[in-house]
Length: 191
Image (cartoon, rainbow, N blue to C red):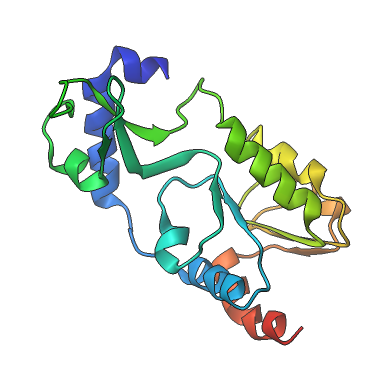
């Protein structure tokens, strides 16, 4: 929040460096989750990631708690710009309509989560009979607190390291979510 406002040029320098180094194609976990949704076995994906890879893999019902770098808007007139426009711009990207600064539609440090997305995520978790939490240490709030809204039968935690919720889960797997989902997809499809 405040870093972006005070140092937009540095922000975009860092942002462009990070994006050019980043792997930008969906991994096994993204693909498996999209397959489960297509089969009617998965109702929603709730993610803290901002890369849009779930949608790229084919997931339709995705709640992006921290927004997405694929969406960028002028802070004055709200005109939409895609990621390519940002990456190809120099210095601070400016709106070609009103010359306002363009900002990625992401939740930056000190900013609040989008209330509508948060409510949708809570609703999906509350209605679920099975919740798979993967690839998160469950220590970043408020996202980590969402698990408290789950009252279903099966809580599955998949993370390389232990989490504070391991004791309450029905199944805990300390491994990468990509490798776990690619190995268990057939079992999930059969049930």
